[in-house]
Amino acid sequence: MSFTASLRDVTLKYKDTDALADVNLELEAGKIYGLLGRNGAGKTSLLSLLAAFRKPTSGEILIGGEPVWENAAVVSRVALIREGGDFDDADTVKAAIDTGQIRPGFDTEYALKLAERFELPLKKKVRELSRGKRSALAAVCGLAARAELTMFDEVHLGMDAPTRDAFYKELLAEYMDRPHTVILSTHLIDEVANYLEEVIIVDRGRILRHEELEVFQGMGATLTGPAAAVDAVAAGLEVLAEQQLGGTKAATVAALDPGARERAAASGLEIGPVGLQDLFIHLTEPTRKGA
Amino acid sequence: MFDDGTPIYRQIADQIKAEIMNGSLEPGGKVMSTNQYAAFYKINPATAQKAFRELVDEGVLYKQRGVGMFVADDARERLAADFRERFFERVLAPLVQEARQAGIAITDIIDYLEAQEGARK
Image (cartoon, rainbow over all chains, first blue to last red; front, side, top):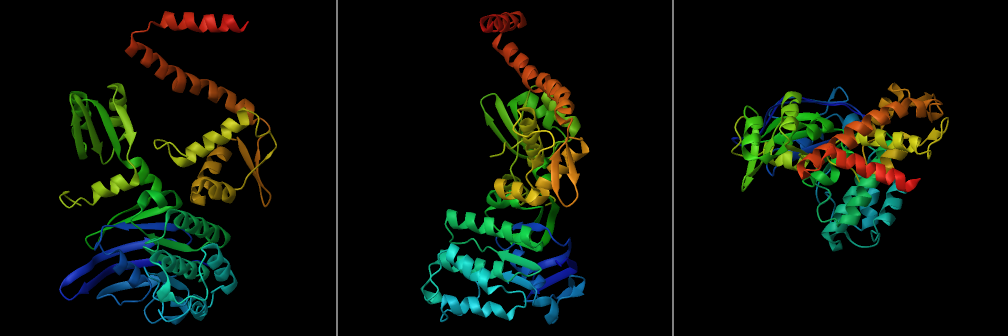
């Protein structure tokens, strides 16, 4: 069984500032979601609410259809792995792993297998670990929790590229072995994009977009060609960025409808894709209107 | 591993089609599972599933419940017309455009192709 997650009219205030304002979000069970947003956009607040680490100022949060706040049966099957892993620094790595057993689904054997794969020194104290190893330990505990909703908040920080690659592979293997709901919050967007089924962009305390990955990947386009021809096609489209080199112009548009695509092709313009990361940068641009 | 322009599921579907056409996947043969594809390409299994669904809809693959996916017996015939059509659209159309930009006459291209063909005989 994997959990659905819903936020309904959720607002979270820290003193006078809204960390999240009137957020509505529905997540289906059994998918891998990417949660993207700039620093301070509200990603961690949102995840903390889903894990019942915090109570919303107003609104309702349901996990698997049930209110999550003070609901031990549900919370014990929700795992939020935060950067650094929330460990007791004085514990050994082995003891930190054993602490995971408070969760009903925790698989110690799997955790130890992962610890070996990530070359974690079981006898060392958590405080002696490098940042990357500490993150790897957090990832191990998250995977082995075998929760029905697992959230990784920037867990990749400090991991080197081979470790991140191993983490994504393990995550995918665990997901395929035992379908559950996963939320990955990360800044390494292009690195994880293909693992995601849906993407949620949070911006200034609001949900800016929530779409299937493919919608994002097919959304934008870069039109390159003679300046006049590019301008003619781009007129009326939402232009995110423009660059000019002599008589050649490149315009990045937020969306290219089939009609415009045909006109661009007919004018001999080069149509290039816009990666999720570039699209994200443009969509969350502070000066962008209507963001 | 993937070009950026085309959706990944379509690239996977195209690759399976190419493997059927070049014989590395035989009619009636079993295709790897969506999970194996997902692990190999490091993609979400839903993406691989979408590629398979498209191929089943096109009659290229068929599903045997509980066993897996197989190449349809007439998959090659089905795909042949498709490949022919796409050859003109994807290979020849850009070629003609490129030739025009370079100021090469179509007759020059025909002469070239005929000379190549002649050399092969």
